[in-house]
Image (cartoon, one colour):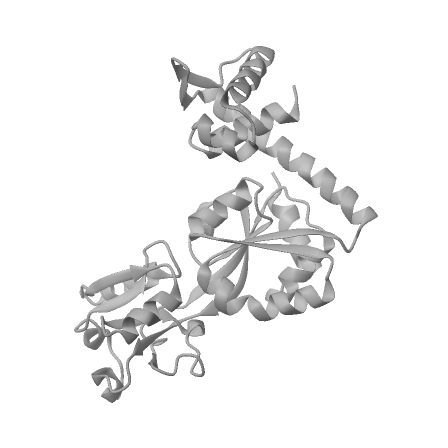
Amino acid sequence: MKLRQLRYLCEAANHQLNLSKTAQKLHTSQPAISKQIQLLEEELGVQIFIRNGKRIVQITPPGLTILHIARKVLQEAENLKKAAQEFTHEDKGTLTIATTHTQARYALPPVIKRFTAIHPKVRLILRQGSPTQISALVTSGEADIAIATEAIEHFHELIMLPCYQWNRCIVVPPGHSLLQKKKLTLEAISQHPIITYDFAFTGRSKINQAFESKGLTPNVVLTAIDSDVIKTYVELGLGIGILAKMAFDPLRDKHLEAIDASHLFESSTTRIGISRNSYLQGFVFDFIEMFAPHLNKNSIQEKLKQGAV
């Protein structure tokens, strides 16, 4: 049994059993992947995949168990590398952060600036996507930490570290009628076309819940994954925007006005997701504490200890 075989197995599962895409990711050939997986099945004496001709169509029940163990083995192999690297090159390494656009654009810049000044030899990689996508990047070992508001809690392989709470604002063009309201209401908002986040992003569920609790159906005419895109279309007059308060900057967004909406929506919590069995190098603890000062190394290690499987 070789680590390469386990890696091929896990990547095939990560790519929905598409060996062509798996081969592209691993920079090898499709026949080579098929051959190594077959050798693994022969050595273990169980069928991992159900095949239709040469095409893999499903993972068998024993295969699911083997896949789960294989992922843990690969995680531990990666942990060995990180542990050795920390003792030989404490100030070097790579930190891959998977996060959403709003976090990358508005919450992370000052933290990254400070971190790179303290750890100039650490290479930072930002991977952006939906909360589900970035959580999957951590569970597969392609990222060290996930930073998101939604979806992390649905990934039981991850330990969640609450970072901070935030709420929303309504953005409108100057002179908009909502600016004349003494107190903003959901009823008033629902009378206008709305531009907001896609369903998978940035606390959208809290927005839906607020309107549903009042028996209102918001007229959402456009959704986007990017706060800047939302603001662009509000400027064009397509509707009013509902977005994270952190995403509005009066100095940059001079052609828009913001109205606080924190009294209308339940606050959302941004969390960091870490794989339960991951080994974190010292600079990862430093980054997390810079992003969320209440999370120090001891508290994070305690969480990891409690959540280890």
